[in-house]
Length: 219
Image 1 (cartoon, rainbow, N blue to C red):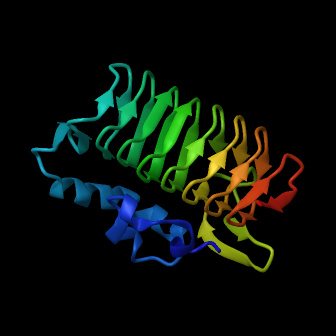
Image 2 (cartoon, helix red, strand yellow; image 1 turned 180 degrees about the vertical axis):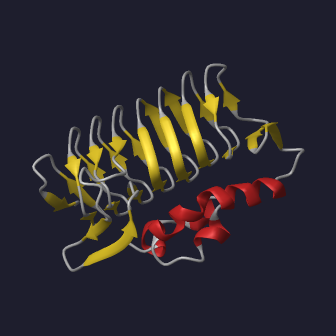
């Protein structure tokens, strides 16, 4: 339910070979920075410009003048990084993505066609193919008591040993506006989260997470 194979089609990210090494997606978080640094060196200079040290932007991507691109990061083809976006560091952003106004990314992998279009914070997280964050929705990546993050499912609790861990969002997931994904949240493929939800634990694939925390299977 929450392995990399369960959540993601790896054919839609430059991180395919990297992610293939792991069973659970959160195991990949600690090495994202080094992975981007190594991957950047292999990019075709006819396709990518190194606009500053360890910041690679595809020639077809559109980066607005007020956006900030912190190293290391890779911005894929046909992607838009809009006004006042803040890519703090360690972000691999795929093809045909949107990083919108006043959004912040830190230590993330965004698969192709991911949209974080308005006022989103995404940190220490992996967002799958065609996933979408509604306006104002965020990943909370540190527990209020600063304890290590545990992934809670209906069947088991998995100790991650990690202090910083946002959300693992599967392919084709829709997150409603102003929702908060608490540390250690895992959302299965093709699931939806109602607006203004407070989500924690594991949401199975093809489910709907409702405001009260009720989860129902989609028809």
